[in-house]
Amino acid sequence: MPRRETQPYLKQGDGPIVLVLAPTRELANQIKEQCDIFGRSSDIKNTCVYGGAPKRSQADKLRAGVEILVATPGRLIDFLENGTTNLRRVTYLVLDEADRMLDMGFEPQLRKIVSQIRPDRQTLMWSATWPDEIQTLARDFLQNPYEVHVGSLDLAANKSITQIVEVVSDFEKYDTLLKYLRDVGDQKTLIFVETKRGCDQLSRSLAQAGYSAAAIHGDKSQQDRDYTLRQFREGSRRIMVATDVASRGIDVKDIQAVINFDFPGHIADYIHRIGRTGRAGATGRAISFFTQKDGGKARELVKILREAQQAIPPALEGMQGMGGRGRGRGGGRYR
Image (cartoon, rainbow, N blue to C red; front, top):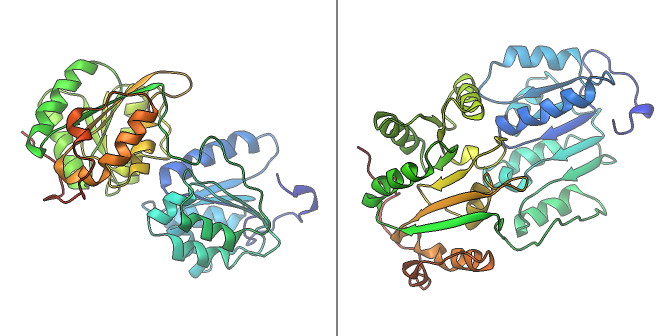
């Protein structure tokens, strides 16, 4: 526990000493689980607050006093504004997946939260990417920081993952998906789609086709999301269809295949999505459907495939000069 020896004991109504901010409730819950493990023997209390769950029980735990608070930005702002908690005692701040929080539009909330924390705090910022926006945030939030880079700053895919790119039309996606699902068999498979509606539609279509599939996205209740994740982890559901809420921050081991039914809008998200497989020395497969409207990302994708020594379809190579114009928002067709 940072600086614990010099900290006065918490009294009821005191705010936390450690604040960990995370972009999603799934990641926040994972962090809390680790806090539970390490805090059990040292009597360090923690709690986790996030949207999509009742406020009362979260508020009661905050008022009782905790050393560590794990929070998503929006729910924390709610509790700060209604006086449930405060950040006057915070001396240790962690921003986990800072780039993801910026992608989700949380920069105003982050700045509002950090402005309420004492300037002599310790701050840790974690980010999978290092764009200009994150560098600006780091300069504003950190003083004389140490930078630690693990691996290259250039986007690169895990070479343990076999990457397959299918250049298809929207109308060919579903039949192509069924072909690959027959191929992967009983392997645990994570399928990404662009929209919440598309997520539900594809999940229903696969269930009707006899596949053990379930959907997870931001409009699902926390109870539904937890239930779906538990089924997927335990293997009673072999296929999970997800929006990008699941691309980072969901810890599911032994995913053997990732399928990008809809190609992501940013190449960094492609790297994060396929990184759900091929972990801890295991091999994995990533299958991506690439349509005409995705053409603007062809050059970056070819570079990633080439650096990972993967096969590059001639049709994809031929799209490298495209500006990415196309019709519609994808999603294919479902039966």
